Image 1 (cartoon, rainbow, N blue to C red):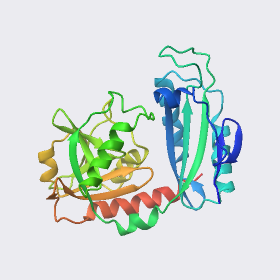
Image 2: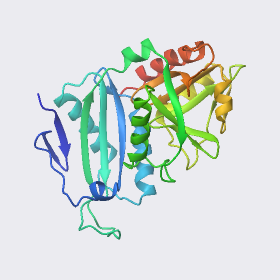
Image 3: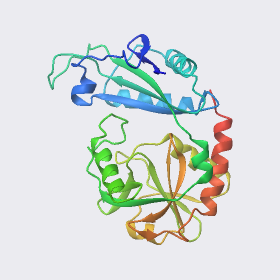
Image 4: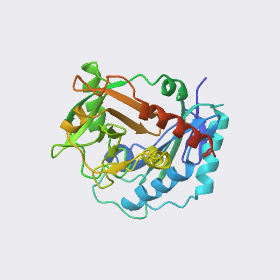
Length: 284
């Protein structure tokens, strides 16, 4: 059965959904997006996603006239119309449509698109098979902190990793790890300290990243937000990634080198449990 999607004021079948060929999201990737996980038919940490959406729009100077209540209602309708119990809801806002030109008018009417994807989130999380990543130069534009649809570079890097039988790429800038292609990167040092790059224009401020830091602190774990090197990765006792669509996953190999014991560790295991408890208490 075809999904029901939302496009500029209308709920339509995915087979009938249309967007202008002059939409700047299509022509220039002049758009921002959010991906919110769904558990038990409800949104996980909606408020965090909405606040980040507002920031992204503000950074690109895109003005919207729809409210948080309106967007939340649309998300719930998409969930209900598609009978979604577990998966994600994707939202995209573009600057709008106009004849192709690098210069744009500030009066354009933004386009709004929302759709769902059914996928397992909890089962692979509990299995927690360790991931294998490779490293590569960070070739993205210089504002990955804005959640735009300019995703060609990370997409190509992820495809390169898959071609080499690896799961993902950790990107490197100035000999320091920035983040994964669609996730934030963490290591755990030899004494159990969690290390992750501090927020800046170099990485996306992940919603799950923020929650993991919160539950880790509440669990008494030591945290250090700073840049780290590839050499530190190789000597780490554990490594992991976080994102809204996969929550937390252990990284057990980097460039073919085993991390720690080469299997998911105790700290990641404890964070998985703490994060799940947090999610269950923050459903909308």
